[in-house]
Image 1 (spheres, rainbow, N blue to C red):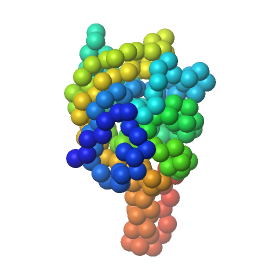
Image 2 (cartoon, one colour; image 1 turned 90 degrees about the horizontal axis):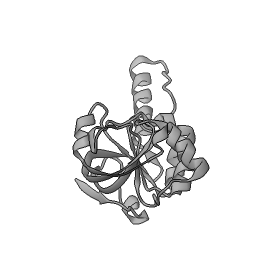
Image 3 (cartoon, rainbow, N blue to C red; image 1 turned 60 degrees about the vertical axis):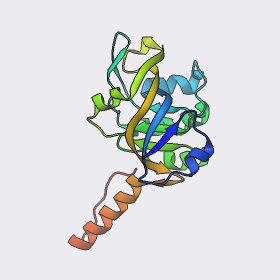
Length: 191
């Protein structure tokens, strides 16, 4: 298990390989669709350079994160490349992967995608030690940005790094195997 610490640096990203198991310690922040759009337009109200964005709409009770399961990352496909460039983040955490355009942008901008298991909202919450700040509350609890202090957050799988994607690679394998077994082609959505 590899322990990554924010703020991440280019060297931290370059050493990672597809399939590596990681945990993350340090500052991370949540952002979904509305927060991505606002951040691209207006910038973030804090310095996110080297941090990790978590595609998540957490459930907060008082000053405690009760549940923090990942949101499907492909919802942010059209926004993520610009978001990474604008915020200078080094990691994206979510579920279900991102498309080829984001994969290319991540390579160019030295960013990594860490896949967190869907349905594990309470496990994710255990890796969050406290709330460091909340921004854009007017967007609602799920869409606001929550700046969080994580400690051994995970485990996660390195799923996109250095221009390679587990999602894209696995899709290709499934298509080849299906064609070999059935003699016909099958199409999946593009990642």
